Image (cartoon, rainbow over all chains, first blue to last red; front, top):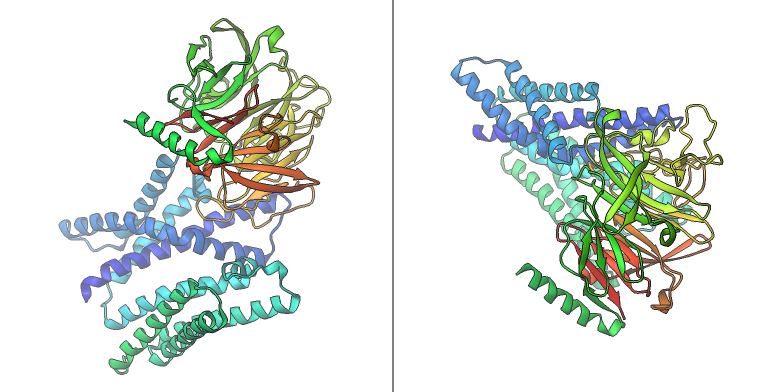
Length: 277
Length: 363
């Protein structure tokens, strides 16, 4: 079980770094707009940062995880050879990994800066600092014992991120969210739009909260609650297809996966009895 | 082997499309990186290759007749090199041709920028070549140059100068040539009626601004200007160009960045022009043609936009600001760099390098 903590905490460190790095690009774009007499309000700031966290941040986790895997392995080797146990060694490794990743992105992609926040020296410094914090986080995390409850919490975080991203899109960009569910938003009546936004947001928000509560309390009931909702959606999706002639859709698969994950986590916790938090 | 496969592929496509009453045939040999062409008479055309070669090719035989000497040295790589070629509206009298290209500029720290020059084509040589425009838009690598040209009926020339990718915000300021369409007299001087002449801090040659990477520039017989440009992920635009207008990039856009980040949450703003049409997802529009011929009578009066990403050609009809679109030639499955009409009315498609080809579409 202990061996599992290294890849899982490496991904966690990459996620922390991506979460710190992404707003640099969002803020640099928004500041420029503000200087161009297009001052975004607070709602737009939140909307852009959240959008970027999922649209840019998630791919960056993969990039940083690859960089960290190499950098932290080297750091671990140095720590073993020189018998040092220093958080700053991992911080330095994280900073170097992010710096190298950014340089490679520029050199391999037409010598341009695909990450807009990385176009200035100040922005580059902030990125490297974020990598440093990622390295420190990794060091702190691997000092901890790794238990089954850590695995369950980690696994539950994966669907939570997806559910939360869908919730955020319904809050901040309902037109696009509705489009992805097959609605032509502009052609729906005012009342219809209102119903769609409030019900869909509530549906996903409630599920996100169930997952959060499940992660914090490790009480299987919360996962069963979420699983019941998704299983119901799956059943009624089948009903719509077979009794009302709607076509097959990808949501059916997503509902099945979410129901399976939720019930799976719930049963795992249930079988283990009450896991002490 | 590769040539055999291509020939076989073209034969298959020709047969498939036989019922559509047109056929494809490859003209001449494979090309390195063809970018633009211009007819110098009923049969011969100049072909610019991004690598820096300018050649004259016969339409009927496909034979490369000669390579033009005296072409300026270019910065070839990425999206840059020898780009657009245009013949002077009075070419039959004066023999002048215009070239746009990317090259290093010693006056701008040896950075790459867009140049436009003209010279006289005498036999197989370009003589008295002189630079008429050098963009104040230096960049590290030849990327997002625009580099399209079009003549206006008043004996001036429009030049599209792209935003250099990393300098996108500069498309909104008038002290540079990033993301601008400029208008010049044919000798390179600035027309007195340009919209920013005499305005402090503005370069007088600027005609419109707020552009990204313009890849299509058309002037109709009535002087109307239509342009298309690449967005990043989404947001390719078709615009009607008017003097002094701001086309919004990167302050407004129907797009997100290649990285996935949102460049701007805004799609409209007072004082910034809306596109006539935008493409989301991107098609990467390349060439632009207004077809005028009885050869394909049903296409007379339509616009054709070749596309790199979607690997097809879009036939557009524009009526009262409404654009209708039809997708053509997607069976070719080729990145089409440019589209032209021959003097007889057939169409020529330039297929993008490195497996570049010239394909003629006839009845």
